[in-house]
Image (cartoon, rainbow, N blue to C red; front, side, top):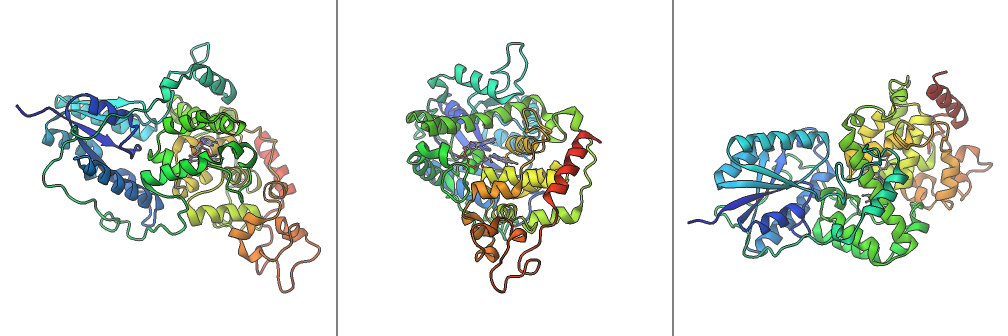
Length: 467
Ligand SMILES: Cc1cc2nc3c(=O)[nH]c(=O)nc-3n(C[C@H](O)[C@H](O)[C@H](O)COP(=O)(O)OP(=O)(O)OC[C@H]3O[C@@H](n4cnc5c(N)ncnc54)[C@H](O)[C@@H]3O)c2cc1C
């Protein structure tokens, strides 16, 4: 009698070790087939130069090699997973499909549709917790409600945590993987319709090996995280977000790294991982935040939404040097430092008076680490519309933020080279400088500020107060 088979469906968990669903599939005793689906419903909305495809493709190539080295294979399909997964399960005779749970509204619907199709054909979709330590209803308030404030959530997370929750989920691959005949190499990016995508400007190393190398590098710096993390010109943060997003690193590995070497830096980093889970559980409980303000009183705010101002912001041409450097970093590399995400987001909403959802959508297009829960949470925090958000009357001053977090203008000079010759004071606000370098003309060589912060600040206060 032939051995029973199951199917492991990789999605945002592109690694063969410390993977909860793969581990469960391997432990089932059945022969494990592995598949990835290039989901046309997602790919259809991406531009041909989307960097995420490059990142995913590199991760898949490495995953395929790892599976092959262990005697298995990574199958792939190009289409709609709701059709492809049940069809493949039928074709391979797999009674069960294993996957890791995804909390985004699109993924929840997709998985419900796949599960319904499988059930109709006597199969089963087995979803596992993998991308977070605590999920869904695992952490609720004393009243049985979801947490909407970070600090009590963080405290509860820490009280409820025990090391078994971050234990490695790994079973040997060799001997348990199916090696179907007639396999095909992965499609190239060009074959997928993403021929213009390149790795140019992509600063993070890709694939599982890239994730491990970055984690190893960060472990040596984690002690200094608390003191350095706010300075974009300094290598103070981990740069692991895209790896956590696509699962080339497991959250358990990240948590283990934070706990391995107790220090203020490691404590602070663990808090950031908890922010990530806070926003994941928020999206799970309140999926409507994906389209509107968490706080009802800020729904329908009359933002003027000037398209020209939005365009200047997105292209890094506002005349506010640190905001422009931030946006150019994003456009060039697909990454933006957290401090800069807060500054750029605040500037769009409170200085340019553009609806936060415009900025959220722009970041969603450009960020390599784009994650609906974290991006939405970050934007609603900056726009003061979210739960536990910055109060609306606390408005970042883009010049003082620049003086504080990039005091020597190192980051600005890197991304706005036309300002390189300005001195360390003038570079934060060239229009206020008594003297500018010979030959430098403000308005010609670099934009004059497109708005006056003091005027816009007052306008934002009126807008939020609905005066
Ligand atoms: C407007 C705005 C939009 C954002 N959009 C995203 C997004 O789409 N995807 C994303 O992963 N993060 C987002 N963040 C959060 C944060 O900016 C990034 O996670 C961080 O800059 C990634 O760099 P890092 O990996 O070096 O972070 P580190 O400082 O090393 O942090 C470690 C990890 O913790 C998590 N994390 C850190 N800060 C936050 C946070 N505030 N909220 C949720 N998770 C956090 C990330 O997974 C990150 O990789 C956003 C923040 C703001 C203000």
